[in-house]
Image (cartoon, rainbow, N blue to C red; front, side, top):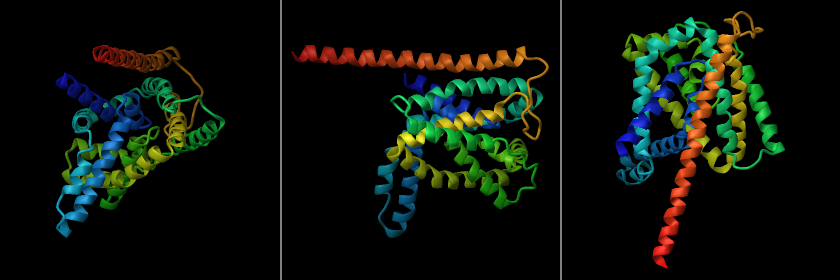
Length: 313
């Protein structure tokens, strides 16, 4: 069973990694969808706090005792296979996904839009109760902001310097953590998407090293803020996340120009519609399967409690 769980988490990481190669699709959204988002965020926070504690304590001669306390809170059984799956998927699929999306932009966006539309159910239901007027008042401006952001024209292909690579990576990894915002889309908007894919495909270790350093710093700074928001303002944060996801659908409207101006549907309408429905069906099937598994686990837990009560009696 442990091997199956590890394989499943590796595949989940691969799905997140592939998603992050696609501008307009959020890896954070996929993490929410497949049920590992909060576990990864909490583990990332514990890992970062442990590193900070080690940096502060070791020079003072206090050792790693307090750092290890934080590291013990990391869900390594989830984090490691998910991380490995992400890295492998990004490296292996960089040469495949980008040309595929470029060659079939309309059908690709239609498929991804179907995935995201149904996945809006995930953060919406995480609120736990029926939506209130305050939740809607938070989600609507967030959706509008995301809609405007995803309509910004591309910055073009930049000639990246070390500082530009570092800052773009820090900003993009924040988007990875935040559902509804695509890290690849951030790179496209800053003109760093094509240079980054090229560096990855050409194994430019200097570029990749600077990019990883920027991503680590961005994650360390942002994940702590997000953890506090989820801990102390959970309902507000989830309502805003839902709005961000909804607004980001603008980037996935199948018919648009290279400058991201939206167009009316034209040409073959059946194909994009079917791809949209396929994406929606995939996510709906996953959600139904998740619901059934959850119900079965609850029933099993209840049965175990009844048996324990009978044994005690």
